[in-house]
Image (cartoon, rainbow, N blue to C red; front, side, top):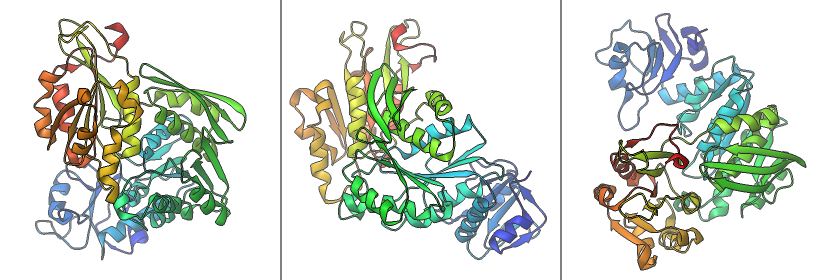
Length: 481
């Protein structure tokens, strides 16, 4: 069955079809477009109309445009509309309306993408599941995800993000979820809000999109839980709470063992045990929230608890890998924690907790002592408190168990200056400068974390670490070397 026929797309958007076409997917990027996709000519940094000819040459089934672009034949397969983004939104609404899937919308200052991916693994084990890719969670990402939803989907997970007030509610109303989950509320995008309560209010707006009899899954452990609770009560929305202080899904005990997190919890008083294949207290919380959400959607909790063990973090979001420094000597390795995709005070603290708990290996490198080493980049969009929030990193309890902290960027300079001298590594303005130093600064037995806002480019440091050797085979674990 085709995803969209020309007739269906016209009915959804009110546009005009050129030709009788059908498409199996939707793309906004000619670099990743697949044969049979509908190419959506969005106007962003560049006008997508400039790439329509290329998309069609690559096998696009049709293109969504406002006019016939230059270099494109008059009889090319097109859907012509007044506004491409509005038409994409219309396709999203129509895609949502024609499915009987149980839909979950997820937002949060930290952990929404990781939790969404956990839910992908959990729900896919119990039914046909559609999930937003990457971090497609904004004004075009949400309608794109909805428009891509196969009609026979049984579950769907839609990630919703925001940078400014007023962004979440319209997207939630488009997604029309049966369950809305808020992973946490933290100091992120503070420059656009007066305080963290303002962020909580915006996150709580996801509940405005809930279908009748919808359910909210909320974090009981955050300081702004009262804001979420008030929103749910005012709208008469049943709330299910998760966390250490929650009565519904209660986090009882977390044990970090190597690269595994073992979680003991209760679900409405019944014992719940599950494992996550990555170390971190925050993964335990995200996992508990994911399981609560899955059960609220109608999934079996026992099967969900088994399936969540298959999830592992994506590159840039806490993924761990062993780098073999000497192909001839399997002992000569270091471990890399790639968390370079994003950063705010809450996620940085969680990442440093993971590093502080990591197991190093002694007596195998030139330094002889395995070390815990962090490469930290600026945290952006924190508003007037940005300097104080960077200084506060130096006082985190986890820093006591970390050997060296290298800092990148003008804001992270304030953290660097506040660190005990013995823990100061290098400070550089840019990641490119820092990347040039890793070869002489790292050694076998070390565990290395890279964490910073995406614009800081800590991926350069991650790549430099990888180039010290090669990624070890999956079956080579730290315990084996």
